[in-house]
Amino acid sequence: MPATPDPRPLTGEPLALDLLNSRWNNDGAPRDLLDGTDGLAVWLASNGLARAYPANERTLRHLREAREALAVAVDGPPEQGAPLVDALLAHGRVRVRLTTEGPGEEPEFTDPSWGPAWLAARNYLHLIARAPDRIRVCAHESCVLRFFDTSRNGTRRWCSMAVCGNRAKAHRHYARTKEN
Image (cartoon, rainbow, N blue to C red):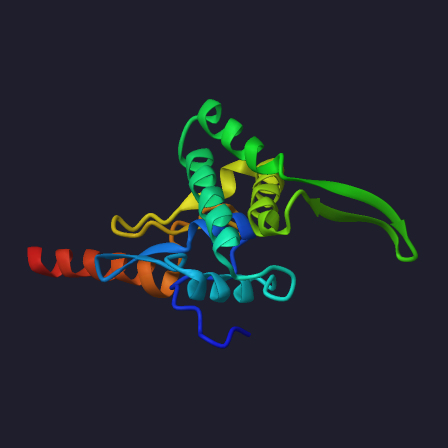
């Protein structure tokens, strides 16, 4: 658990989406967890990466670059996002090994400060191979958070039913009662 609590309204999404969710709106004001190395330390700890990667300026710069590339890949046309994600992936590789527990994969990086950025890009590849249509943006008009829809029927609309879903329901209820 991080020493400073993670202030974001949605955590626990797959690494690529969690990185995108390091920017959010709070009462209409944009927030950015990666505005410095303290926020980076919180993000690394929240994703179980704090022991393996330093919360320094180089890691922060690479992670911000990854966030921008993934935003283009998720929101834009594939011909724009693919080269950006590929550029991130060029900083590492997967070493396949046979361990005593069986087959294993171990990431290797040109520079360890690329580790979190590379892992997020690699995770994005897994998500689009698994179910690209399940990567969603919250349906609330003022929310910018993304999530991976793991609902059985694939109809999740909100980053959080308790927050954005509840706001939308309250707004609809208010509109109905105002009409009467």
